[in-house]
Image (cartoon, rainbow, N blue to C red):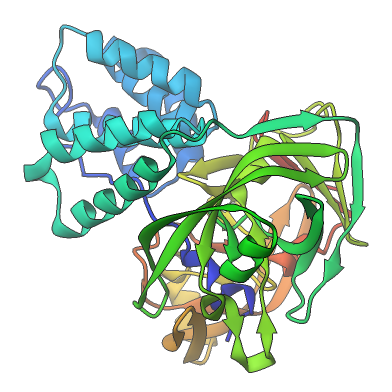
Length: 427
């Protein structure tokens, strides 16, 4: 098993952004650059897509620009700005092809989710299911209906709110699985939750949700594990969560049966996970090599270019011109099929094939792959990492090159994760 973190949590996401390859542009004439942009978005390479647009902005029509900016604003955490572009597109006298209209509606659904406007997400999901049925595969329809369960259960819940009462500095502790935990205070009680940017939604075991007096909403949501087993989950609303000098209201959690968050190999029961929606709302988080968790009341001025994006609720980082998911909850970095394809000749020549074991809720599976050494260049520092698991084939339609974990992060004394200006900086 690559890491305990990968045992279950990378597949907690219950929705994703559908992209259908686009062959038409607005003027009925194929635009090479527009199609190139769409291909980059399909592969989730928002960084290269942004560069393409900024370098060739005048080559795109007005509607193409609005479409592109709606996607880029969404990817770089500007959901309000993205929705404004979508309003402009909907008002345009030039009708979008259905494939583009579908894409932009999925973006709007995601914008509402980022804004914690669950009623808006529900309306948009209903519209997609009603208007675009012929374009949706059975799998995507099931996914959308599952989303609809979530948004319907939450539509009367107010948006999550943050109150900063000063800077916060907390010491994180490591649990039996080696994962970093933060102590939360909820309804006068305390519990240690894993800090994990790779968790699309915050998560809690059913017994802990009850002990902390969270409001449980029975929703019977289907969550797919890496093994293909579907697990039923409910939702919970935490009215008040205290994290150092930070008060967070109306926090949404996925609620799993205790058994789904139990790791039998080490006899370890996970209480819960503090996931991306909470972490992003803090605007900036600093993590030190000696395990301090720091949230400044005022975010710092950017020290680097924007190298952070978001695909749905999954953070992405740009390294060496390639895009990776970024996961503070993963002990080790893992590389995916696109990385194998990029370095196939070198890998086949010098590396020995092996089986890569990966675990998830419901068990573990093995995949063909390699264990390799690779040097990443972050800032002006080369980071040489040994014994990296590399999967030869896609297992979840991966378009990213891999998932960056703690083995890279801990090479630095401090990491700053800033969702206001969308950058990750390493000291």
